[in-house]
Image (cartoon, rainbow over all chains, first blue to last red; front, side):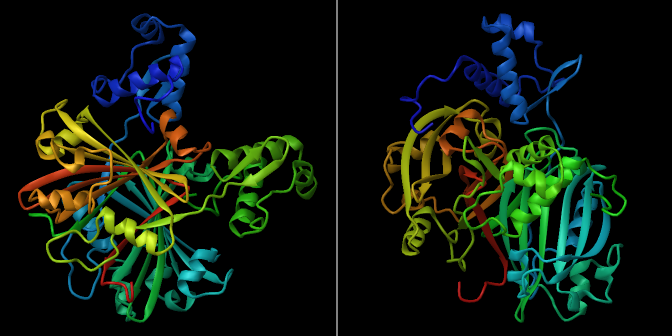
Length: 259
Length: 259
């Protein structure tokens, strides 16, 4: 990888996996999504069955294909949904887009989004306590939004609030807040005017893998957003996305034409 | 996960894994990074050795801990490096930050960054051909930048150029371009004024896992950036980051105070 011309030759099953990967990426099996059966691959490449098996194992572990018992090997295909995080010119004094606008825009584009809510008190994780100016292990209110796209699990969004901020408001109900959470915060005198998104990825834990219905080799994309106004931090919103379904889009620099 | 109060009780090893995960997150083993030996966990929890093994397997597969033969189980710890993608007020007519500035800022902050370069011609991937307005399988010039932080593998950045744009310029040398790639493009009359970042995550293939020295359960964070000026798209820059080392920061809305 450092220098492809000088690299040692990888083992045969890895070279076969690389070739299959290239054929997948070039769209060869986009039609029915089914790869040739193992005996065909054995013949095409003139290799042993075990080499074919090991090569397909590599692609299974990468989350690219899935073996269906008694049926064969298929491309893992889930419809992608691009979430445009930063799509609009700023309105003065507010973040470019809140959750309610985002949902409305998706629906206008014919995307079937649905949400469920849960609220409970948790002990603050250390980084969240730091961001909100709390002591470690202080309690925070967590409002969870479970998001499905076309009925399929898409994202889990956890908003963490200092209890004094959220108490007695719509943010403590397990229902959509009228006008969105941002509207409720604005009515409390805390209009979110800025945020920092921290993006990384990790493998799911078993509960996450179950809710997202993830196969092997599919990580989560994690965005930890800290929002603020002039008075300071307002909330920490950590959103986990199924990486085989979600792509986050950020627009930088000049506004794109005709967004 | 949909409703923690109504969820079926998970198997014992998963509950043990959840408890160990909580202890890891709360910093219990931050000192020497070593978890108790299996016999101690067996006693602490009053469970069978096999339950301990399965629970630790879960954490290994999540990339949280690593077993060292004959030594025990350790937290997987690599130093994190935050890449501030969007840290500055716009300068008029250019993207907020190019690679050379980024490297200079990192060095000023005492971060040891190093780079290697490679350049070759490849067939355009379909999405890249689309973005650059090429026919599928047209050839593009790819300039690869291998980035290490504190000598550890951090990111692979692949810039894809139409051959007519890059030919005969510093972009075709396997050396740093004087003033950075953005400067070279600006000198060609193509100042990058806008970009769209597309963020997702996936598991590494074997060559990637080898270069990044990734353990099991560590995905790649992938940013596919399409840059443009008023005339149209300029290049596609796909950057792969080791997700256990990298976090990408995007600033949204009002400028943060005192950046």
